[in-house]
Figure (tube, each protein chain N blue to C red):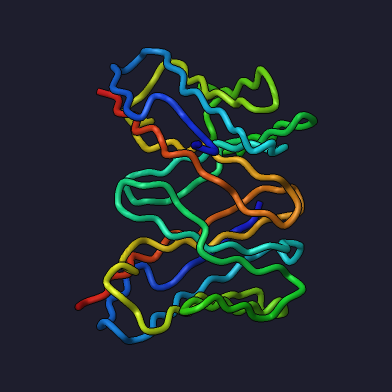
Length: 111
Length: 112
């Protein structure tokens, strides 16, 4: 199956600074890469996604980049706010329609 | 309207018991999944199922079995529960293609 690695496992930033989370995947046939935010005690929720034919996508303060050749993708959050504090997961979907998740990044935004 | 609903929300049981978790989706999605989230927050795929194919992650013990009475439901049965089965179990569904997973609210299983 697919193997998704995610770094860092924990990240603390000052409010207003940027946060970057990086993921790599192993299956070159994977073609869809969603990112999820999970607040304490809640379900993971989609925040942004990117398809393999796109290099970058932006939605307000959140952006995702994809390098298919290197098999890595990153989440960028600008102007962080305390409500951005959560665990973030990257994921890769393979051709069998199975989603494999990274190990998560616990982001803390310090007011 | 909850898109993916699972019951119960909490399940406390003793070792050796058999239990089930129910999942229903009203999104009309073709594929449903079960994920296990352990104490370290790792999200591990257990099963994916559509009306054609069941894919079982090779690390899942055969004490776990999914049952799908119809396209909108994928229940999880667990036999002979063990302490290590304690976790949060998430049901999810997807339309397929380049579409995301939609998660249920999770079932926190505690085995004592």
